Image (tube, one colour):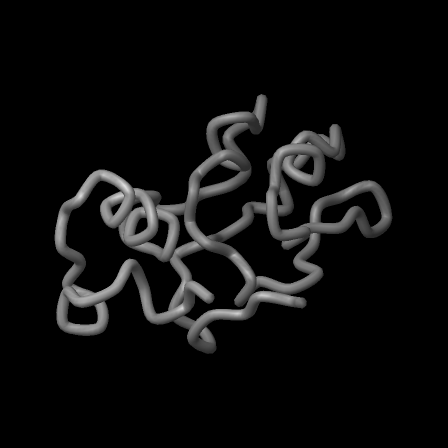
Length: 98
């Protein structure tokens, strides 16, 4: 099942001019958000990003920005830790979890 969250709300941005084409973002992204296009990173499915931040932390040239801690990943982690989520009125991990 393909996970897509709310349309156009993700904080994920890419500076293609800085991209060196190493492909690390493709390796670490759990939702297959990226692809390489003509030796540079491009989005395969930007709205599938759960804002975990793995891509930005692993980019050797800081070409990727994402404000981790605001997306679905944090909602799921907070639920596992027993912390209420603002999403869905606090009664479940996240609206986008299944």
